[in-house]
Length: 179
Image (cartoon, rainbow, N blue to C red; front, side, top):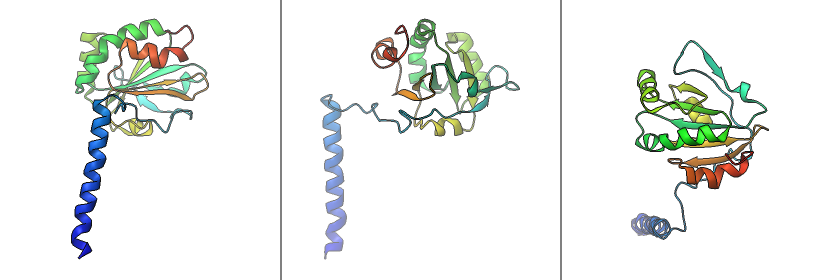
């Protein structure tokens, strides 16, 4: 007889868990973008990827060693990436550190047009056609932005559209001069 009630009880418990999470999101005590990255405080993944503008010229992230830098995962197919783009242009100019754009599972020609039309905030833009590098970084959706310290450790991860206010609150304290 319990075999009939067990699925119903499990369903009710799961429903209660979801209801609690929704209430916490609604009243502001839980931010769904605040998912902690297992990379925080650990070495940033390294990669070698073709550049968006010159696919025959690979970019090796090892050249960033010893310097703080930002990784921004984006795609032309991503509405939130377009939303954050104007803020990225301002932030990247002010921050004074390299901004590396990882164009995630995208068409390179569309990416070139996108950057040509909207402006290019990136020091370098690489193409992660298969999404393997994004997996190494623990990306689950675009846009996602990471700050890596000069020691190569991931200091900050933010999921969602970056704004100047979010940069000032979460990233700038780690960047010399505040950016």
